[in-house]
Image 1 (cartoon, helix red, strand yellow):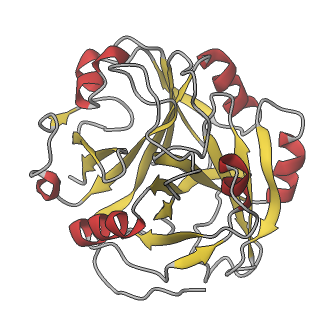
Image 2 (cartoon, rainbow, N blue to C red; image 1 turned 60 degrees about the vertical axis):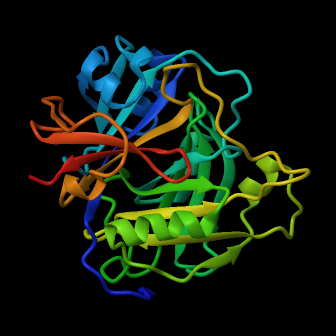
Image 3 (tube, one colour; image 1 turned 30 degrees about the vertical axis):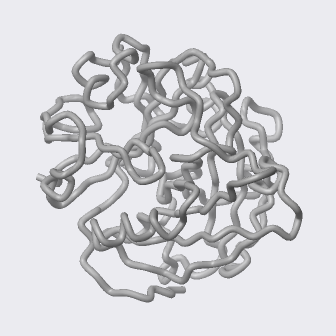
Length: 310
């Protein structure tokens, strides 16, 4: 099913990597490899230059592991060890709030997660507006929020990518902020992303996390990058009296806890030349493969790492 409302040539090509901060790297790595079936492709401390690029100099020297699913050789999951942050709760703060991963059988995965370091917060359920798509949600061992999604209908015509294995790659990254329209316009106008209808949706896991009424709706939309099955979901979190959504707490000079960074391939780094941040620099780690990268801050305070397509 396709419901695009615009037809553009997006400057963001695809999701390259997601990075989560976890307080116990060994436990998190064991969960991702043992439960999700990811394999380690690189490990080592965060280089001081990279930490500076991220705008998180105190992260220099932190233990780090980079992984992939067997079904995809171009998309990475990166875990960085960092002390737990008092007051951090998933789905209650602005910035990157969830990474969504394609899977072959979400029901079988739910059974596997039932007795694991992952905490299921949303059982498999068809999407309200696309019932052939079935999704579940879980919190990882470091407080990172993960969505796991399958296409139960025609996978050849689906907007979802093929899974490539039992657990595949990240295909949607979710960002939340207090001003939905400002986020939407920032991404669409800067990177020419393809638009889809804006929904007024009840999202049970967000309602529960933020103590919202069962009938409370939020604005959300998933906008498209250039390559099939690479999307950015934007969620508008309610703010004001009685609301708890706020800026994410973090240790000074460190990456934020949980869902910390999203790394995207961009057609031209000059598209963010007007934004503050360190100058582009080429890097040799597996995620970059010698290409230039630059990290900028998005409209909701999210760290966006951009890698030049060539």
